[in-house]
Length: 499
Image (cartoon, rainbow, N blue to C red; front, side):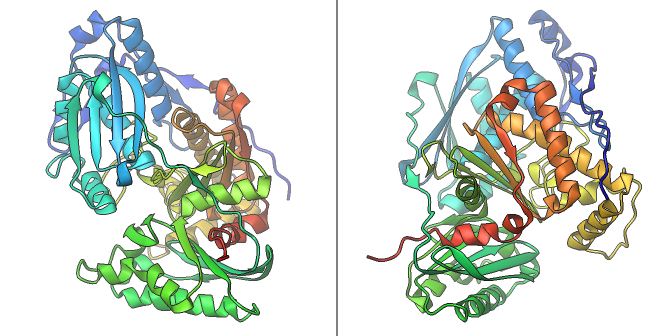
């Protein structure tokens, strides 16, 4: 049944000055300095784009842009250059400005900015080229005892070094050094591809790019303490795919989490595995490579999403976003290269409202996983006046909402409209950090007519409030087949064959 809905996301609401904002940390709240705000004329409006089921949504992009604009107009702005150093001497730089003091708006801006950069770029050392007070604040916040100890621990696990913050001057922040890794796209030969998600995994077999077998299976990896659970599920799936091929020339994989050199460094898929057994889980892909004795390459599912988009659209400069059990993201630059960034936008902040939902793993508020995943749908159920059995899992709740959507239920439609508002704002925010021209949106949340409503709403937000981004990028929703198996097919193309 064809339906049409009216969108009201073009309404802006304003609240008093950002000076009344109280930036809460775990132990205390930083009180605002009204006289300081008045002195620099920092009347930043708390701009809210009306999200149908989330009226207090405070998009990060609006706050960030208003802060930088106000700081520059104050004539007190100072350069702030952040450098994030990661493996093999790679380093990403981000240049901006900040006010010299410790007012709440400045502390909120720099802390959330570092959080976004950490999870988009990755790194074990943060160079802070700017006011010493800001560097000291960030060193305290991003420490083993600070408010962001989760982030520090995860970065240390990912890169094998203790996370640290270095205070310096803007001119002494090291130069950028980005990876220049060519993406996959190899279709020759007999290949197997797999895609590991939190609630299901997909596998396919392809001969010279033509899929001859595909399969999707449910599983529950994040609650399994025995790493053999993960191994046997994946190993048996590879054998089922191999049964449809005359031989196996290469295997490529896509997996949630931080994957370095075919090794799992951090992943929710193995979060239940003990520290003692973690090396066995971390070496899963290397074990399979030894057993099959063919080229095998596994990348983060976000980067494979970007590759899938580039392959399906014949275009580069691709930002891929997958909305499934969590949020995955990946990026391919306009020269067809993968820069080696972390792209774990599930932990990147997108909403600054003080009452934003809290992520159960990181303990942080307003991060992407709660806005672009099954968790987002579940979060909006009460506001949509939809009730589900308490014991019903998130995948089943999403299916129920999709079933209601197919029946023309307005309550379900408003859930997708709200996520569309989130997405439009986030795409504008991402454009400040990623130079992309195509955005490909994948994942189970986008399945069916709800996905079309979601994308339409995001386009309206971009066109109305961020016209410069709307003119620059194209927002894509692949066809149903590509949504379901495109990730595994793209993963299969990752390794080059032996010559």
